[in-house]
Length: 310
Ligand SMILES: CC(C)(COP(=O)([O-])OP(=O)([O-])OC[C@H]1O[C@@H](n2cnc3c(N)ncnc32)[C@H](O)[C@@H]1OP(=O)([O-])[O-])[C@@H](O)C(=O)NCCC(=O)NCCSC(=O)C[C@@](C)(O)CC(=O)[O-]
Image 1 (cartoon, rainbow, N blue to C red):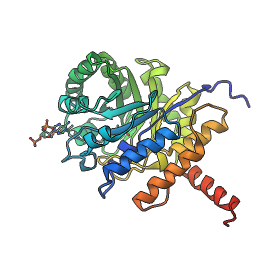
Image 2: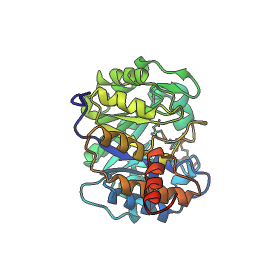
Image 3: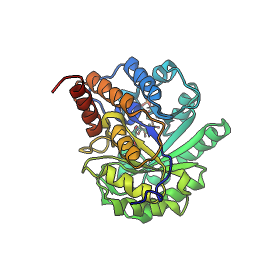
């Protein structure tokens, strides 16, 4: 089988410090988040979603955003992204000089209300000045589009809603967008339809896939997106994650699993999979549970066996 139709290179954004940890029930010390960022960049990640500037009443785990952003030692060539839902969040983020800000909307009205306490139309009104201010400050702007396949409150989300949201994001100056399967209900054809709808407004270089693995479809969905030419993806080391406003949804697809898939296809990521597996094991130990990455577990088991374990 030829892999000529896949991109030669894929860029991954590891979202574990933000998406991965935002839903943890116990406080995760800022020092652990900072070390996680350091380990990810040492493993070769060139984009890391570090934190969010949201209401600490809504998402207490991200209340240490300044401490984390100011504590990291930046590597040249690495892009550090943060979430900013409104001007208050953007102004707070500006003090910490992110390379990219993310405004986050939803293709589902109900999810928009639950997540950011406003309708889709109101969210765009809030995002517009944020996008303008960011671009004036020379900061890149990404738009996360939640529930592009299904919504925990509304069920199936038709591609037309995704197209509508992508158009609204484009109109206010968002530079690239994430097609997110927030609750991990997507299957390859549904995900391809959501991407297709997005392609009416953003070219393939400005679309990324963000898949959760609730139903075990995230790698299949990644492959389906790759076949369309998508070469930007978000994932979370050890499969950490979940949105506080998407109950029952599991974590993001594990970065280790995506990298294993990509390297198996001969696609370059610039990531050291062994170092990544160590990072997944390290953060899982800090959180007191086994890694959620299948590839991570297998690599660590293989290494233990090679060292004389069972
Ligand atoms: C958006 C808001 C703030 C609206 O919240 P609101 O209550 O409508 O905001 P408000 O403007 O009425 O203000 C109420 C209070 O919040 C404060 N406030 C207002 N804005 C901020 C801010 N930026 N930072 C800190 N504080 C803020 C504001 O100062 C005020 O404080 P008070 O006077 O009561 O003390 C709220 O709904 C919120 O914080 N939601 C959190 C949403 C969130 O973080 N969700 C998870 C991330 S999205 C996600 O995970 C999905 C994604 C991206 O990964 C893709 C996918 O998989 O789908």
